[in-house]
Length: 250
Length: 270
Image (cartoon, rainbow over all chains, first blue to last red; front, side):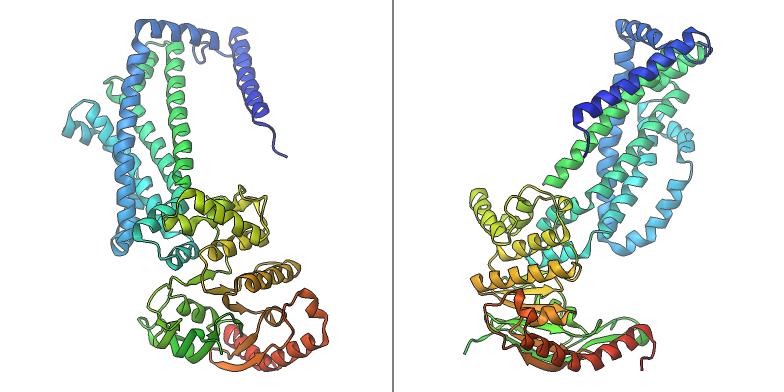
């Protein structure tokens, strides 16, 4: 029998608190060098200071808006292109291996080109992230539609569904789990690209906060930046899980 | 005399016509079959003899290469509104509950929520799934999922039901019980049923007529009228008359099954 939700949440919280406590203890006892790993209590201090200066909300907003915008545009474009590549089978067959090869290559190294095209600004960061993250969304969307169970399609045909009904009530919910796998993957790549290029280029955002803290040897701030990135990722993950449930209930 | 609900005249079908000659497979050759209104007819034959293809042609899911197919006198050119279909594979929508699955067709036809809910609940009751309305397919057994699929087809009140080995993936006991339920439902609603099966016992238990098909290319080899009394339940299996009919059908089917086995495996059988 599965455990009740409150026990699962309680156990999860205990594991996290236990790990933080162990970390605090190990750093305080200097089993771990505080320069490598800051104490959780000192993260709190750095967090408060960054919040008071207004620095953290500003930088988090920059990253959040970059991820949000990239994800919105890249996700929509990826879904549309994936659907079109499914719809136009020959074009899909011709281009899928090319896209697969691109996905396997380190596209993130193209960032100087985007800097040249767009300048040293947020547009370059978002364009780079979009190109990196859109490929798994396109590929997975096409594959998801190709793998919809033929019997489910036959059920729709017997019921004389219109094309629109067939797409929205059978194809889309049947393909949704696989499509969302692609969207999650795309989001991860977009997030990584944005943080990495913010780190390298230094035009603001949480990546910039981490790189600044790293160069100043400010381990506390560095961890605040890393944890905030983790929280943003969690927000998007939760949003996607809910969106998947909603799509499947349509 | 009841008029024909389903009619196939000299239907032939070859797969792979657009490919190489060697890849072509003739599934059906000049098959003619008539099913009267309210009749329960089973198609039985070796694997690959075109039974499911014939069913799909009746359902308007695949076109006949030659010949004509009619549903209530209307020539079939696509899915017909009076036809319902139940498939061998699990065809329930995993993202919908039992209720959501059963009411799907009515929802797509734009019926008001309250009305379709009432009708869905009555149909769920008919297939014996009351109490499971809010369960998802993953929470149901294989037999229950097939009953959901049957209810989803029945709710649209089709005049003919095409069933492609609907109990093929189930164990023998579940198959017998569901067969009994299907007969009870048919007795109540009076639908015409064309039923594809590999199982001779099942065909005899359920049908008014059993049609035996030859190995590929499928043709009709023999037809057996099942004269067992109706209404029937599964206890009929124990009767002497049932055993005699099964033996007669197997005699007609055996040679075709051996041919089908050779076609499928390439192995020779003594």
